[in-house]
Structure formats: C-alpha cells, structure tokens
Amino acid sequence: MDIEIDNISSSAKALMQKAVDHLQVELAKIRAGKANIGMLSGLKVDYYGTPTDLTQVANVSTPDSKTISIQPWEKKLLGDIEQAIFAANLGLTPMNDGEFVRITIPPLTEERRKDLVKQARSAVEDSKVGLRNARQKCMDVIKKEVKDGYPEDAGKRKEAEIESLVKEFTVAVEDIFTAKEKDILTV
Figure (tube, rainbow, N blue to C red):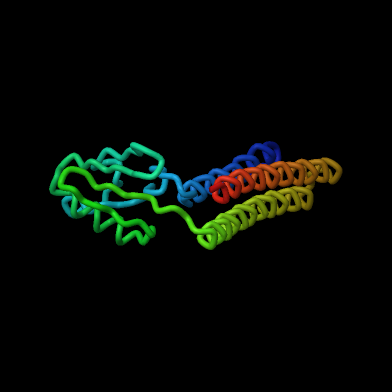
C-alpha cells in the first residue's frame, strides 16, 4: 500500500483497522464453551481432490448452545468432513450418524479457560504489533516527506494524528479483549 502524506490519516486508519479485523477473526476461533460455527471457519474439506471451505459443501448450524451440526450436501462427504475436523486439531470430536456430523462442545475446565485467555492475549499482542507496524510505516513516510521539503510543523501535526489513531485503536483492541475474556471466563 503506497501512502501519500496528504491522506496519511486515512491510510493509517485503514492499516490499523486491518489489524483489528484480523484480531476479531482470530478471537472468533477461540471457543468459549458455547457452540459457534466460527470455530470451524477456515476448515477445508477434500471435495473431489480440491480443498474446499466446509460451508461450501455442507450446511453448518448450531441447534443448541452445546452442539454444532454439519449436514453435507452429499452423504459421501461425511467421512471427509470428520477427517478434516480431526486433522484441524481443534480439540473437538465429531460424531457421524450417517446423516449429520455432530460435534458436542465439552464444558471447559478452569485450567482450559485460563489457557484460552492466554491464547486470546497472544492474539491481542499480535494485533498491537500490527498497530505499531502501521504507525512506523506512516512515521517513515512523514519523515521522508519532511526531509524532501514538506513543512516541518505540518509533519509534526501529521505525527500527532497518527499517535492519536494508535491510541484510539489500542483502546478498541483492549475493549475487544476484555469482552472476549469475560466471555471465556463466564461459566
């Protein structure tokens, strides 16, 4: 992404929003003891030799808070779906009844809840690294432009805008984490 000094704030905002969006996707994959089809996002099933998203070959639903139900469009895919779930190492055990693949979400132990919070915290730290990288990229552009003749006081204002955006997005990331942590630790 080429960043121009005139629209640096919008470019920085776009880069930082990508980091926050990525965090939300990663946190959706962390289960909090409740069935959520997001836990299976990104799961690929071998469909006639082609890795295909699970949602493209089956209907995925949550009939209750402890069960994920997967009904493939073709019954011969039941075994492939089971294998894909095992291969993804999600800590889930699929059950095939000939019509559906059902996954029962086991209750979380206190130790497992703490591990999930650590996993979420790690995703948050990765997101913050993304925010800092976006800030660094923008600051480098500002410094280069100032060196090439852009007014120094205008450069300082642009730097202040970027710092303000970083603080705003950092607060947003922490708020997202706090909500996920509460969700994970709620029994």
